[in-house]
Image 1 (cartoon, helix red, strand yellow):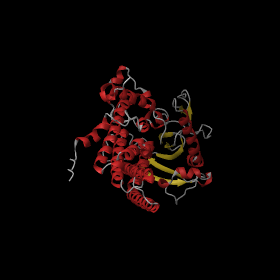
Image 2 (spheres, chains in turn cyan, orange; image 1 turned 135 degrees about the vertical axis):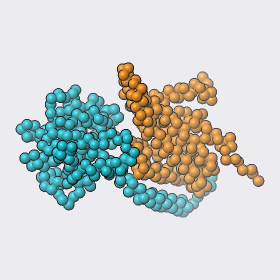
Image 3 (spheres, chains in turn blue, orange; image 1 turned 180 degrees about the vertical axis):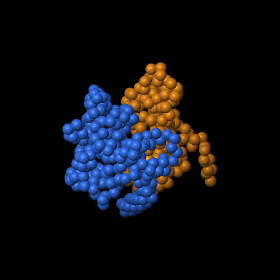
Image 4 (spheres, chains in turn red, brown; image 1 turned 120 degrees about the vertical axis):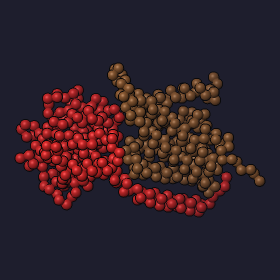
Length: 241
Length: 215
């Protein structure tokens, strides 16, 4: 076997590492705009789906344009508030990363609100959710009717929950349970929506069925709703009065 | 002067052909099965992963083969890892930019191509000692052998587990669900991938004479 001097080995590794680093950072920089665009489109699509738009995308050829158009047309307004319900004009709602916000202390969080006007001219408020499932992050959007209590629609998504079990949270049947549920009880107390093992009473306005075999994800979702919607509580109360 | 070997000599073609059957990395050498179990729930991610592995493997094999005389043996494993890791990061970045949905489904498994034993194995066993062209064919063959199994497993798991093929609801369109048939939820879980691979090995071993074992 040919033998190499230590100097050669050092030079070889240094050059190799430098070449690789240059190549990778160059490629990463070049592709960044495309990647950010994808994330943005996905977020817009999630927001649209929470109010029942773009649920079925099978016939759509150019997804990006479709989403951009639908978003621009339907989501008429967005703003950021703090947990005290005060408007924060300097923060753009779409740019808020809820994961970062949840790590802050409760008073300092920025909370995004997106507004959709439905066919009847009603204002629907879309709120952002973020939490931790069994294997990774879960997130979603809840759309509330003008009374700030009744759920208009919901969408949940996950990064890596178990297929067939926890991953069911992003399926149609699971999300279809939410519209019509109420997050405040008649006395005006914040209740959020619970997930019930073994099936919820359909008449119960504050509960939905949990997913069999997906208990941890279901409970995580319940906690996520409680925590994230809880942040908006003051806003809901001022808005509904 | 030595005569130049034709590009597609029998020897070279065998480099491409063998790993598809006689020395298939998954079913015969039982390498790289971890990702084969994890991503084969649906056909689409499996095909994308197969293509990614083909790209990573063919290119790293060529790069290592080109450098084979200048790589100091003492750090050759590190060099191999660097080359593979670079390729994998490139593939991952490209998927995130142009095939975002699939890249989300594959999540960590693209990154885990780095740890796929087939790739390191071929670099160490073949590329370090051979010229670029045979190394390229060898990489292509082995990655294809891996990909073929991945796709076969995914085909059955998607069909029986979700009743779809490439997300096309085949069973629903055929009206099979009306007869009382239900999807087999077990097919979606990783253990069934292992069993499917087992069945493929069984079929292959009972048909391929070279794989008969003396008792």
